[in-house]
Length: 243
Image 1: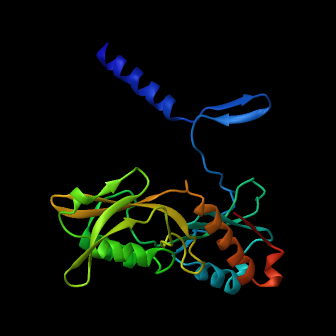
Image 2: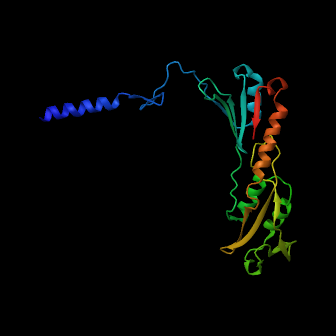
Image 3: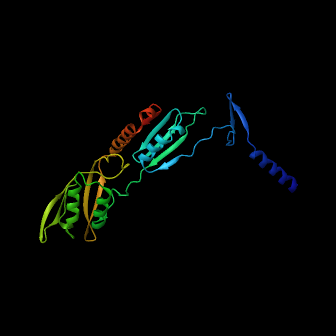
């Protein structure tokens, strides 16, 4: 009886492993993932970190492109090149760009030295950046007691010259230009909130985004315009750019 039971269980397992073909409403379905032998082979996508690499590919490897292509600006840091629909209603995925952007962390408190390094490395020297650096670089230690804060602006004490000190209003909001998208396009400026606090007797600083991500639309439009300018005229008829 035990032997017969084991044989019965084994037969059930074999039946479960076999694909089951079912017709529903005139369409054929299978309970297993099967790959068609006559399925059109698709290319393995190429990856890059720059927009110029994708432009070079489009110019130099135009024979690899299908008759209709779609260049999709997915986000400010990602662009993909797809083909139009094939006979099987799928798309061939040929190229992808992923921008390498600096890792500045918004809404994080930095100590004075790290803040000065990170802002100079990850922001353009434009907008109110000079003011931010002047305040952050000269804030007096243990000046928390002198901070004035009405929820919008702050007042603090900074060094002015070798021995003199002065009370200044911390600027808010500030316009800054961080590196957040591909370097081939203009970096969009945004409004930010600049904050200061005392941290173990030393000043700490943070920058908080204050526009709800509106810069992303501007960056994506700039990327779309970049491709519209860089792609040769004879290929523009075959490539649709969306952002």
